[in-house]
Image (tube, rainbow, N blue to C red):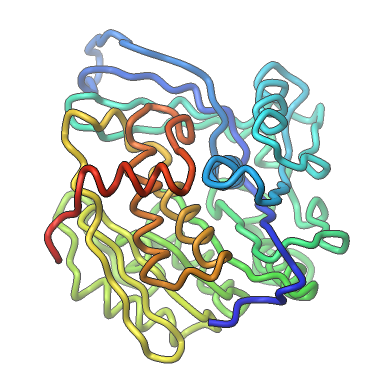
Amino acid sequence: MNLGSKSRRGFITGGTWCADHNKLVRDWPKEEEVVEIIEENVRGGGSACNLAIDLKRLDPKIPVSTIGLLGEDEDGRLLIQEALAAGLDTTFLKRTELSKTQRTDAYTASSSGRRTHLYFAGTAAHLTPDHFDFTKSNARFFHLGLPGVHEKLDKSWDQDPNGWVTVLKKAKTEGIITNLELCSISAKKIYELVNPCLQFLDLLIVNDFEICAISGMELNPEQPTDFDACKAAARDVLRSGTMHLVAVHFPEGAFAYTRDGNFYSHPSVAIPETAIIGTNGAGDAFAAGFLYALHENMGIETAIITGHAAAAASVRGIGTSDKVESFQRSREIANKWGWRDAF
């Protein structure tokens, strides 16, 4: 698959940078109940942050820059320090006094491994297409997110139906391969925001709920994955846009359809239940592994396997990127635990 100019190298991420105030509890409480916080920390979160740091953990030598908006507060200072420590180019990671930094209280229940997010929009509400400048970037891939939590980007911009379209058009004008990340908002909102973007995407890597939402269907996230519905939705979405590839991940595995009609799939890692601390950031880790393998021309099946391996490494901690390791080490962890049965 020919993805972008070989004269370009590396990644640029853009959009959501937030401070994840991670808290581990035994069980998620009912209203008016009290539970003890077992462990807590503050780490970078959001698609632009997570994927950028995950990529540098997979391969410290890969060039990664990022675009985002932070506040002039303690969370903003922490995120800048985390980005620099990871080796990111932070030229376009700007700070403002308009608001406090976007923040998420991310609760993970150890009994189930499931997560619950409460977020404060903060600086996310002030990010606009004007913050995105690709004219001096030599990145080959651009990863953007998250529709639904950025007030100005979610609305129309100039002649475009929303600011996400404007940003993607800017990147494509410079010859950069585009990818979009989503988050857990309503299926209706996903459909409204994402469909106008499909004509300006080269890649789309989403989960089972999200692919069905984009196609106009709505899955019940409490039910097991409906593989047939997901495959039908992926084919429909691929036909609706200009993507070279649509990939869908879910707990049992992942698959991908390509524009030329090929289909690839692989089950996920058989992670021991005792090894799972939290799933916060696992989707970002999958996307990072998948995109890294594509960037390094490893092939689509290898990209799926690498995505699974990065996600498996990720779930060993409550932070989004703390436990992601090198490409080689992530593959070793996955092979040690083995793979689920084919789905």
